[in-house]
Image 1: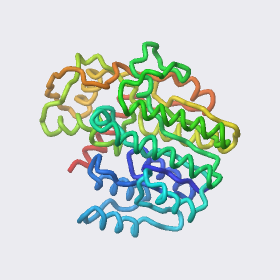
Image 2: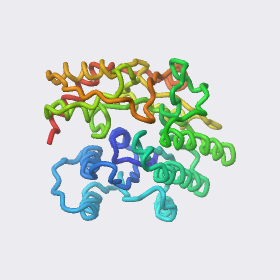
Image 3: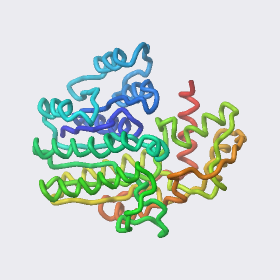
Amino acid sequence: MNYLVTGGSGFIGSHLIENLLKKGHYVINIDNFDDFYNYQIKVKNTLESVGKSVDFDFSDKLSDIQKLQSEVNSDKYQLHFQDIRDYEGLEKIFKSNKIDFIIHLAALAGVRPSIEKPLEYQEVNIKGTQNLFELCNKYNIKKFVCASSSSVYGNNKKIPFSETDNVDNPISPYAATKKCGEIIGHAYHSLYNIDMIQLRFFTVYGPRQRPDLAIHKFCKLMANNEEIPFFGDGSTARDYTFIDDIIDGVLKSIQYLEVNENVYEIINLGESEVITLEEMIATLENALNLKAKINKLPMQQGDVQRTNADIAKARKLLGYEPQTNFQNGIKIFVEWFLRNRS
């Protein structure tokens, strides 16, 4: 199979590509190496995902990405430095490749940054996603897995969150763009028979996690003996999902679409285990054998109080069953962090 993965040099995307390549598939990776965080991290992710040494002499962004492409491109893998907002640039890739399946992970991520730059989030997460749907229709690509987010649930009062719950009340531009992606996807499924699964990811963590996300950020601050920003009273809680379990759910979604037709499904991928902010910090303290310095701050705009996934649908349709509890997942993450600490 020939898979196109958007955002394939990011945290989740690089792990997915690593798995697809190991299974012998042909993979096209589209990533724009956005400055949301240091592009060098994505270079390292890319090298690891294709099984190359992570030793790399950096100079400037453009020449580094060109050097990376020459290093990793092969008869099984292509890396394209491409922004999904650029329809013409995307179409050149679609024209020159046979694509059987798209896994769309590229997005501007993060609740708080979306409040500061809402129009940019709209451009990337809505226009960019619709560009891909349009090209699927034009080039007759009928299989599509799309990354949505647990953020669409907002401050849902019903626990756990189910795919049938009303999600008409997002509390951040990021969440709103993710819901738009689901709605537009349904329109293209209905009009053009594109089989599609929208996966609502619940707080993914593990090796290669983005440095702006809480677990990685807190781990680094604690290791440097710096204060942790502690928002609220510590009772906020998340359904933290280990990267291996997320990848298993994505792969099972791909398998489901490959053998079924007339599909449009929204599916939660979570751990179904809720961890409070206080518990998360205590688990990190134990894994690092360090005591955190706490800087207590008020709750921030856009943050939800709690996330908790009902994964009954994923179990039934996909055979999804998370394997890594939070304590073991944090242990694996901390071991990776300490090996890669700069």
